[in-house]
Length: 467
Image 1 (cartoon, rainbow, N blue to C red):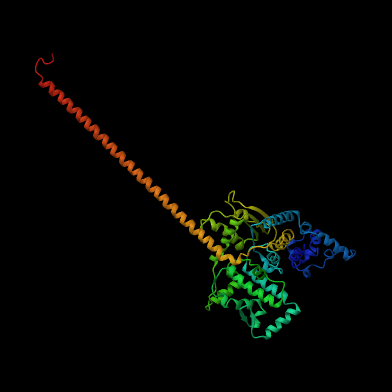
Image 2: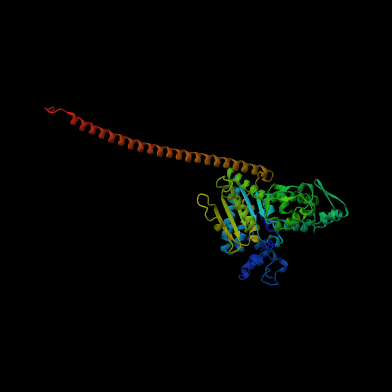
């Protein structure tokens, strides 16, 4: 399970790989699992129960741990209570089946305190590189912190530090089509601040387009430094995976964009494009196969995945395009998906799996499960197709509007025809009534005249004419 081990190799899950947490959970059942799983190794208490017994040879302890890590499912079963491990493993199998199905478009939303964890979004990178994820929605702050953290981790290496020292001595360093002062390249914050002022960014962008441009230059900086442990933005750019973000004001990147606008910078982040592009992805996914999503945490990232589907039906008028499969992962007591799907009736209700576990812990575990069960796949990158996908839903929306207007015209014509017919029938009824009344009057008058004639005839007959 090479890819799975890679996912579990970084903090906070380095404790898991070496088997220390399984022992902690077994020997300290009252411990808080989230606290154990997210703690640093050097923060662990100096407790003899944490480390292997002195009488246990290191090789034997290591062999025991290896047996525990033969497979990711075995590792999870040995590390968590059944109430957690069973739904987690079921969700992993469920996602693996869906992602393995040809024509499935798979999206992940991540929302939670990922920025506070040292591994951040690094578990996404192997999934992106294996082609298992087609699009992502995340918090802007998590994306920024992940980019900064991955760069700082890499620059701790001596060989990279030497290159950075050389950059600091240079007045300008070229990165793709732009050149930057060497001092800005050694800081992710300064690099991004200069990037958003550069010509490629002077236009209206969705958050996916903005993150794609950032990922492009971050990936090139990593290439120049020969950094292999790249950020999620850089990994997504390499695979052409759109990465949407929540409200720009919720991250350092968004605040930099807003501050630059005050001095005439023309970069505008258009959240309308976000929803239309996301809806275009779901529309294309449902036309060619199915859409599967995994929501790690809630908030705006999860909402964009759900609203993209609803947007197609109302107000765009393209009909129901529900996600076919949904996995929701949330901290205990915070599952909300069934409530959000209230009112969705069969056959549009998706297959749903729910896991109560902190998203920051669940992400590397689900990533390891997918990498172990699903082979790498080649997929058409969605990023270059975003404009085309928006055009498709625009055309569909216009056709739906035209059909709706034609239907309204036909309904009005039918209603008008029915009204005219009712009026004609009413007039005919009135005419028939008047004609009947006139005929009755004439008949009565004729009868009266005939009676008068009869009386007159009787008066003028000569006597004896009856014989």
